[in-house]
Image (tube, rainbow, N blue to C red):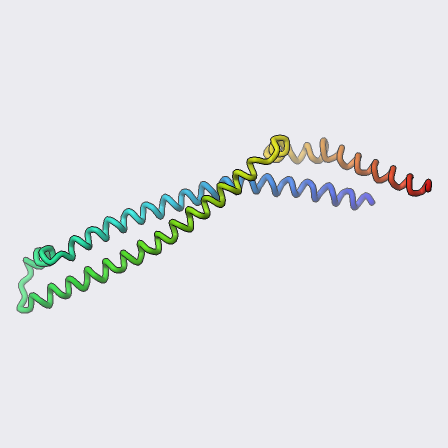
Length: 167
């Protein structure tokens, strides 16, 4: 009987600990996700600038200008080679932009979900959060409220057993 009471008490304590850790981890995950989103947005901006540079470089007059100092017997092949090189690079940048856009959308969704979870956790009753966030919550549960709850439970069990024996 005493073992069951201790088991119930320990389950209560560990549940309170898990809830306190959940609350802080939800807020931390929102911060981490926002930092990741800022990184993705910065990379997107860099790639967009590079894509714009490549589009500008692909204009025929700019290809001509870039090859002006190079003498060749086959200038058409040089221009075509430069055009292919720039096109391949531009296509790579565009595919990276698409991947970053997908990543950004997923991060935005994850942030929304994490914010909702953090809000739900913060909307718990104030008295519950007071004990869960307190560094002395373990002491209170073990020596204060936990002991009182265990004593009340034990007293109720004893009264219930006596009642059954008297019948």
